[in-house]
Image 1 (cartoon, helix red, strand yellow):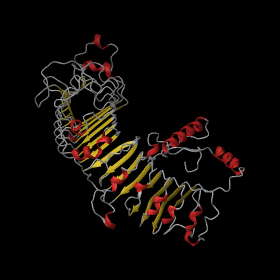
Image 2 (cartoon, helix red, strand yellow):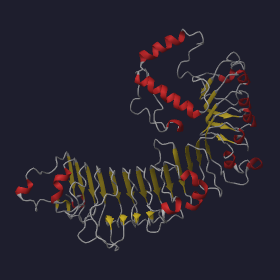
Image 3 (cartoon, rainbow, N blue to C red):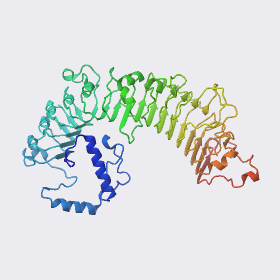
Image 4 (tube, rainbow, N blue to C red):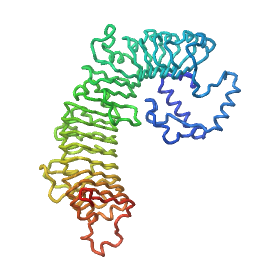
Length: 550
């Protein structure tokens, strides 16, 4: 947009889509190349989060040809070398920019400035201005002069006063203030009526009713609600807490909102709608972000309070857009989904239909992930399940009933399952009402996980058998890696009827399972039945009993 490459563009979203289309065309023609491994480690812009393609490469030959063609263009005035530092910047004549009236994009990086040159007002055609890591600005009032400015990026700068002259930038579409320290006058951002993308980090408490300089902080976030064109919001608020009013934004299509001093451990994924909240209460979260909870793709919650039944209390619709859910250190949470107490429509709609990854840690009172019947389609796309340090957890799926049942599929797409330090976990799936393992049942208790490739159990004192002869043959036929540690009462790993169904197994790691009698149960297989059935072709086998010196 800053270079006006696509002519008149109505919105940043349109510019993004056109740019991605052009890049894919150039890649298909080998004029641009994919990045090398490791070059995409930096988080991409919110506008390009899904693609993860912030960087592309150009072959040296293509680059040289492009430079040659550009040098013959009569409008091509000069070429700029990469990473050239400007020395003694402040000693230059203030008319340095006077002859650059046609410049559309200006980017200054690590330039030590206290104020911008007044000659910037000659930039009558300036569309994009980037000032990154330019230390302390005492005066940036001149930024109100380039009336055509559409993109303003002030990253990692200390700006003592954010001037009201910014209100003159009536065509500004993108404002990036990430990592900058700014004293923010009220009503400046709300006057930028065409602003589509806002990115900033806030160190003060934005919910305070008072504050410095005549109440600048009062109603700070409420100002943003007046930006009717705002479509993308990247916001970091370093202090925990939420306002008492609903600050959901009606028209947001992209957002990355983080609240609280402690950054969540997870939540960085290629998605364009993310909420990461620390030390807040469930009812406050619903009141404040009711609309965003229904559209977010990533939800990371640390020290969530006053929430016992996650789905029922936070979104009865079932988080229909959510792909990644991370919950840690909640002392109240009892169930993620409790259909025993929910009023479901008939037929019941599914919860978490798009969820791909679920991580739960340090939920001290969590008894089960799901309690009660699971509606069709729930967790239908779940691929990764990780549960750690949940001391009260008894079952993953708990359906109290006296009715007999057959084999079930609860997570049909689950690829990776990791269960660690869960001292009271009894069964993966239970229909019992007692607090003990069902008589004669294995850990999985007739649950089929047809796509499971990796299984970690560490430690699991209540597990005597992972699978048994009641479990369906082939229920874990794609299993490649099995890690068992500290399962002190485990007797048998694979029952006799499982050999045929675990031929994909490549890695077997068993540590400190001191009661283990058999890994592959062979006693019940006679010679006739065993024809064509063999122990899987393992590539890596590690069996240790370190506690006993073996």
